[in-house]
Length: 233
Image (cartoon, rainbow, N blue to C red; front, side, top):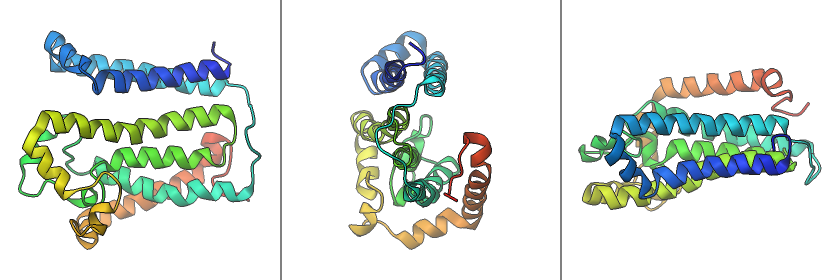
Protein backbone atom coordinates (compact mmCIF):
# COMPACT_ATOMS: atom_id res chain seq x y z
CA UNK A 1 0.00 0.00 0.00
CA UNK A 2 3.01 2.30 -0.16
CA UNK A 3 2.27 5.09 -2.61
CA UNK A 4 -1.31 5.66 -1.49
CA UNK A 5 -2.97 7.98 1.02
CA UNK A 6 -4.44 4.95 2.77
CA UNK A 7 -0.98 3.43 3.06
CA UNK A 8 0.25 6.57 4.77
CA UNK A 9 -2.78 6.57 7.06
CA UNK A 10 -1.99 2.98 8.03
CA UNK A 11 1.63 3.92 8.81
CA UNK A 12 0.44 6.85 10.95
CA UNK A 13 -2.03 4.61 12.77
CA UNK A 14 0.72 2.05 13.44
CA UNK A 15 2.99 4.77 14.86
CA UNK A 16 0.31 6.05 17.24
CA UNK A 17 -0.86 2.55 18.18
CA UNK A 18 2.63 1.33 19.04
CA UNK A 19 3.34 4.41 21.15
CA UNK A 20 0.02 4.82 22.94
CA UNK A 21 -1.03 1.19 22.90
CA UNK A 22 2.20 -0.06 24.46
CA UNK A 23 3.74 2.65 26.59
CA UNK A 24 0.49 4.10 27.94
CA UNK A 25 -1.47 0.93 28.60
CA UNK A 26 -1.37 -2.14 30.81
CA UNK A 27 0.71 -3.86 28.14
CA UNK A 28 3.85 -2.00 29.22
CA UNK A 29 4.08 -3.37 32.79
CA UNK A 30 3.21 -6.85 31.50
CA UNK A 31 6.07 -6.69 28.98
CA UNK A 32 8.47 -5.28 31.58
CA UNK A 33 7.61 -8.12 33.97
CA UNK A 34 8.20 -10.71 31.27
CA UNK A 35 11.23 -9.20 29.49
CA UNK A 36 12.85 -6.94 32.08
CA UNK A 37 13.18 -3.17 31.88
CA UNK A 38 16.28 -3.17 29.67
CA UNK A 39 14.96 -5.67 27.13
CA UNK A 40 11.59 -3.90 27.03
CA UNK A 41 13.21 -0.53 26.29
CA UNK A 42 15.34 -2.11 23.57
CA UNK A 43 12.31 -3.75 21.94
CA UNK A 44 10.23 -0.59 22.27
CA UNK A 45 13.01 1.50 20.69
CA UNK A 46 13.23 -0.94 17.77
CA UNK A 47 9.47 -0.89 17.18
CA UNK A 48 9.46 2.92 17.39
CA UNK A 49 12.29 3.16 14.85
CA UNK A 50 10.43 0.86 12.46
CA UNK A 51 7.23 2.88 12.91
CA UNK A 52 8.97 6.19 12.18
CA UNK A 53 10.81 4.74 9.18
CA UNK A 54 7.56 3.36 7.76
CA UNK A 55 5.81 6.72 8.24
CA UNK A 56 8.60 8.67 6.53
CA UNK A 57 8.81 6.17 3.68
CA UNK A 58 5.04 6.26 3.16
CA UNK A 59 5.00 10.07 3.25
CA UNK A 60 7.78 10.30 0.68
CA UNK A 61 5.81 8.05 -1.69
CA UNK A 62 2.29 9.41 -1.17
CA UNK A 63 0.62 11.12 -4.16
CA UNK A 64 -0.30 14.80 -3.89
CA UNK A 65 -3.98 15.29 -3.09
CA UNK A 66 -4.73 18.98 -2.50
CA UNK A 67 -7.13 19.92 0.29
CA UNK A 68 -6.65 23.69 0.19
CA UNK A 69 -4.57 26.05 -1.97
CA UNK A 70 -1.24 27.42 -0.84
CA UNK A 71 -0.84 31.12 0.01
CA UNK A 72 2.38 32.92 0.93
CA UNK A 73 1.15 33.88 4.41
CA UNK A 74 0.80 30.21 5.38
CA UNK A 75 4.56 29.68 5.34
CA UNK A 76 4.95 32.31 8.05
CA UNK A 77 3.04 30.12 10.53
CA UNK A 78 5.78 27.50 11.04
CA UNK A 79 8.49 30.18 10.71
CA UNK A 80 6.93 32.07 13.64
CA UNK A 81 5.99 29.03 15.74
CA UNK A 82 9.27 27.12 15.28
CA UNK A 83 11.38 29.30 17.65
CA UNK A 84 9.02 28.50 20.54
CA UNK A 85 8.96 24.81 19.57
CA UNK A 86 12.77 24.75 19.49
CA UNK A 87 12.97 26.50 22.87
CA UNK A 88 10.81 23.74 24.32
CA UNK A 89 12.85 20.96 22.71
CA UNK A 90 16.26 22.40 23.65
CA UNK A 91 15.12 23.13 27.19
CA UNK A 92 13.77 19.61 27.59
CA UNK A 93 16.82 17.81 26.21
CA UNK A 94 19.36 19.75 28.27
CA UNK A 95 17.80 19.63 31.75
CA UNK A 96 16.36 16.96 34.09
CA UNK A 97 12.72 16.18 33.35
CA UNK A 98 10.63 13.86 35.56
CA UNK A 99 8.35 13.03 32.61
CA UNK A 100 11.21 11.34 30.72
CA UNK A 101 11.92 7.61 31.10
CA UNK A 102 14.68 7.05 33.64
CA UNK A 103 14.46 10.49 35.24
CA UNK A 104 11.70 9.84 37.78
CA UNK A 105 14.09 10.53 40.66
CA UNK A 106 13.86 14.23 39.80
CA UNK A 107 10.35 14.15 41.28
CA UNK A 108 11.79 13.82 44.78
CA UNK A 109 14.13 16.81 44.50
CA UNK A 110 13.42 19.93 46.52
CA UNK A 111 12.28 21.78 43.39
CA UNK A 112 11.35 19.31 40.62
CA UNK A 113 10.14 21.98 38.18
CA UNK A 114 12.98 24.14 36.91
CA UNK A 115 13.70 25.94 33.65
CA UNK A 116 11.06 25.39 30.99
CA UNK A 117 9.25 22.93 33.27
CA UNK A 118 7.96 26.08 34.96
CA UNK A 119 6.18 26.87 31.68
CA UNK A 120 4.94 23.33 30.91
CA UNK A 121 5.82 19.96 32.38
CA UNK A 122 6.01 18.52 28.84
CA UNK A 123 8.24 20.93 26.88
CA UNK A 124 9.57 18.32 24.45
CA UNK A 125 6.13 16.98 23.57
CA UNK A 126 4.76 20.50 23.16
CA UNK A 127 7.70 21.31 20.90
CA UNK A 128 6.87 18.32 18.69
CA UNK A 129 3.16 19.10 18.79
CA UNK A 130 3.57 22.76 17.86
CA UNK A 131 6.00 21.85 15.07
CA UNK A 132 3.52 19.36 13.62
CA UNK A 133 0.48 21.64 13.85
CA UNK A 134 2.32 24.62 12.39
CA UNK A 135 3.49 22.62 9.37
CA UNK A 136 -0.04 21.53 8.50
CA UNK A 137 -1.00 25.11 7.58
CA UNK A 138 1.29 25.61 4.53
CA UNK A 139 1.06 21.97 3.44
CA UNK A 140 -2.53 21.69 2.32
CA UNK A 141 -2.45 18.16 0.95
CA UNK A 142 -3.85 14.96 2.41
CA UNK A 143 -0.45 13.33 2.88
CA UNK A 144 0.98 16.26 4.84
CA UNK A 145 -2.11 16.55 7.02
CA UNK A 146 -1.78 12.86 7.94
CA UNK A 147 2.00 13.01 8.43
CA UNK A 148 2.24 16.21 10.45
CA UNK A 149 -1.06 15.49 12.20
CA UNK A 150 0.27 12.15 13.43
CA UNK A 151 3.41 13.79 14.83
CA UNK A 152 1.34 16.53 16.48
CA UNK A 153 -0.92 13.90 18.05
CA UNK A 154 2.13 11.96 19.19
CA UNK A 155 3.24 15.00 21.17
CA UNK A 156 0.01 16.49 22.47
CA UNK A 157 -2.01 13.33 23.12
CA UNK A 158 1.14 11.73 24.48
CA UNK A 159 1.47 14.48 27.09
CA UNK A 160 -2.05 13.79 28.40
CA UNK A 161 -1.42 10.04 28.54
CA UNK A 162 1.90 10.46 30.35
CA UNK A 163 0.15 12.56 32.99
CA UNK A 164 -2.41 9.82 33.56
CA UNK A 165 0.26 7.11 33.71
CA UNK A 166 2.51 9.02 36.10
CA UNK A 167 -0.42 10.02 38.28
CA UNK A 168 -1.27 6.35 38.76
CA UNK A 169 2.29 5.12 39.30
CA UNK A 170 4.05 7.93 41.18
CA UNK A 171 1.36 9.00 43.63
CA UNK A 172 2.15 11.93 45.91
CA UNK A 173 5.46 12.76 44.20
CA UNK A 174 3.69 13.30 40.90
CA UNK A 175 0.84 15.16 42.59
CA UNK A 176 3.38 17.63 44.03
CA UNK A 177 4.94 18.03 40.58
CA UNK A 178 1.55 18.61 38.95
CA UNK A 179 0.65 21.25 41.51
CA UNK A 180 3.84 23.16 40.66
CA UNK A 181 3.44 22.90 36.88
CA UNK A 182 0.85 22.88 34.11
CA UNK A 183 0.10 20.77 31.08
CA UNK A 184 -0.86 23.81 28.99
CA UNK A 185 2.12 26.15 28.43
CA UNK A 186 2.19 29.27 30.64
CA UNK A 187 -0.94 28.29 32.62
CA UNK A 188 1.01 27.74 35.85
CA UNK A 189 2.59 31.18 35.36
CA UNK A 190 -0.78 32.84 34.68
CA UNK A 191 -2.20 31.10 37.78
CA UNK A 192 0.68 32.48 39.88
CA UNK A 193 2.13 29.04 40.64
CA UNK A 194 5.33 29.68 38.67
CA UNK A 195 7.61 32.52 37.65
CA UNK A 196 8.48 33.40 34.05
CA UNK A 197 11.64 35.35 35.05
CA UNK A 198 12.91 32.29 36.97
CA UNK A 199 12.15 30.05 33.98
CA UNK A 200 14.10 32.40 31.70
CA UNK A 201 17.04 32.68 34.11
CA UNK A 202 17.28 28.90 34.52
CA UNK A 203 16.99 28.36 30.77
CA UNK A 204 20.12 30.48 30.44
CA UNK A 205 22.01 32.29 27.71
CA UNK A 206 23.80 29.22 26.34
CA UNK A 207 20.57 27.37 25.61
CA UNK A 208 19.10 30.51 24.06
CA UNK A 209 22.11 30.88 21.77
CA UNK A 210 21.88 27.20 20.82
CA UNK A 211 18.20 27.64 19.97
CA UNK A 212 18.90 30.66 17.78
CA UNK A 213 21.72 28.84 15.96
CA UNK A 214 19.56 25.77 15.33
CA UNK A 215 16.70 27.96 14.10
CA UNK A 216 19.00 29.88 11.76
CA UNK A 217 20.48 26.64 10.48
CA UNK A 218 17.06 25.17 9.76
CA UNK A 219 15.96 28.28 7.88
CA UNK A 220 19.15 28.20 5.81
CA UNK A 221 19.12 24.46 5.09
CA UNK A 222 15.36 24.07 4.60
CA UNK A 223 15.48 24.35 0.76
CA UNK A 224 18.20 21.68 0.55
CA UNK A 225 16.65 19.37 3.12
CA UNK A 226 12.99 19.65 2.15
CA UNK A 227 12.91 21.32 -1.26
CA UNK A 228 11.12 24.53 -0.25
CA UNK A 229 12.12 27.78 1.41
CA UNK A 230 10.96 28.08 5.02
CA UNK A 231 10.17 31.77 4.47
CA UNK A 232 8.34 32.64 1.23
CA UNK A 233 10.24 34.68 -1.37
